[in-house]
Image (cartoon, rainbow, N blue to C red; front, side, top):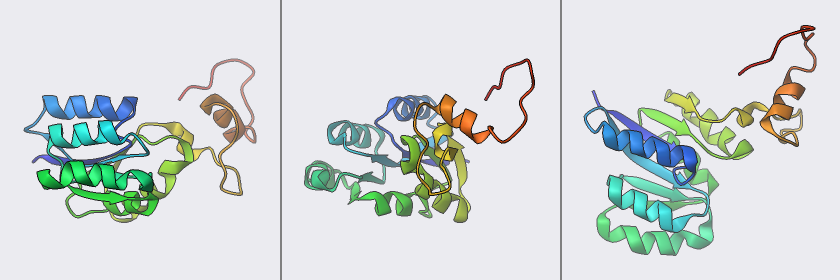
Length: 161
């Protein structure tokens, strides 16, 4: 059975690599939904190449550009952060790959989990938020340190992820 994938953050490094893997295994995988923050030109190129069902551009000022390029290909176009969450929950999606930067991927990932989708997380930074819901400063290594700071650490060894 072919797995239908939504890639949240398709224009980034992880998203482009995922599309490469999907294109190498067309009998097993298909890209159904692609999302991007603001890279409209690459999102358009990816959508046409992979013949996706729909795309979401988070930057609402780029909606017209994306719509005008993809409408003639029969590709549905949406915009805004809320649309990313909705796209992740579509009935045409089996798995959601969250490859968005930092905290922005948290809500659509939670919504996809609630709707029963299989989840592939491409970045651990999603889980490093303080009690106010804001991301911790610094790198993901700093986030790991802060996450585990209340646990006793061994005197030797390395914390690995």
